[in-house]
Image 1 (cartoon, rainbow, N blue to C red):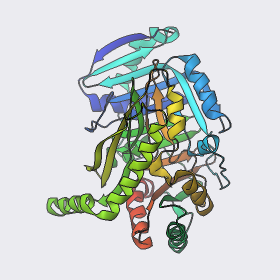
Image 2 (cartoon, rainbow, N blue to C red):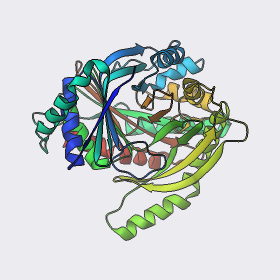
Image 3 (tube, one colour):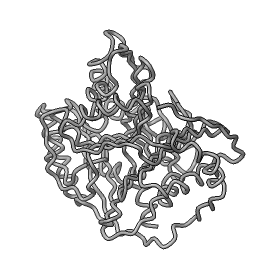
Image 4 (cartoon, rainbow, N blue to C red):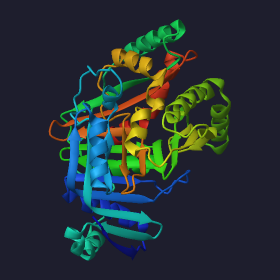
Amino acid sequence: MRRTDVVFSLEDREGFKERLLLWAQQHTEIIWLDSNNYRHLYPTFDAVLAVDALTAIKTDYHHAFDDLKEYQTVTADWIFGYLSYDLKNDVERLTSSNADQLGFPDLYFFQPKKLIFIRGDRVEFCYMPMVDDEIATDFEDIAKVQSAPAAVSGQQKALIKSRISKGEYIDKVGQLLLHIHRGDIYEANFCQEFYAEGQELDPVQTFFRLNAISRPPFAAYLRLEDKYLLSASPERYLKRSGNRVVSQPIKGTARRAATPEEDRRLREELENTPKERSENIMIVDLVRNDLSVTAKKGSVMVEELCRVYTFEQVHQLISTVAAEVEDHIASVDILRSTFPMGSMTGAPKISAMKIIEELESSRRGLYSGAVGYFTPSGDFDFNVVIRSILYNETDRYVSFTVGGAITGGSDPEQEYEECMLKARAMRRVLEE
């Protein structure tokens, strides 16, 4: 189905982006992806809004990738959505038995009637024929939206609880270290949940605050009826452009400092610490192996290894791994063969997933899954759902999860402190 494209010029891009997301709240299906003008490899657009589902697929993990492949192929249009971590059970003979308080479907994609792209100082409205007569009116209505107030009105401070205590966390990391020293695994991403019950949340205002703190390149706001994702993700999972596939795993974290001198020292320390580099290199090897399943022989290349990228809250070690695929390789099959992303599992992947399922205390669900889109030609781009707040509005349940890579050189106390560093932005917007 051919869409109608209309382009307008923007005088105040940041103000328009804010008004656009506020305007979108009239819809029950929303996905907003924002690069926050961050300079990273392989950009596509500055931001995109997808709203108002014409068709959708919403399912649990059973045969989920097959169902998605059929939906994506038949639709042959832009589709936006997410893959939850528990799709691991469709890829491998695994289970998820931990408690799930959020209730997100395992997989959800929709075909939006209305797409709005922002590229530089231009905005492109890309509407389906049944709604293309609304383009001019929508542009005018967006311009009239009142800007959001700086504070979240009427939202009480959240009382954040830990799903496990610090002592329990340290004990569980100790158990992981025993597995590593026995040779069962050599790295595992271990996560812990923080939550608040009976919480009234203003999702869009909370997202504005979280995004302002972090300014990440893969920010995402998602609404599916009464369920919300507010994501300040710095990590790309996987992108396909024609025959080229790119993954950019993150492993290795350091805090930011108040002075330029101290900040530079922390950055250099992160870049040169053997433990941090080894965490990243292990996952790079895993990603190379995953990509080789669908890649042309000999085409998998590491373009960047352990490069330091700086964000508002932290410095991160990021690597870039690329590969070439044949034309006939289906996009969903590339995702299937690499999911879940190695940076959120560990290695060997299947053994790590089995062990962390036993040790973690809540179901990951959408956390450490991926949000993104497919184009009509089958190209795609997905982030990794980290640094994110999840909200079930009906149950008034708020959750965020943080984790880190445990290797043979890990110190449990230091790993706990790294988790607290990663949790800082989410706690701040919920508790202040």
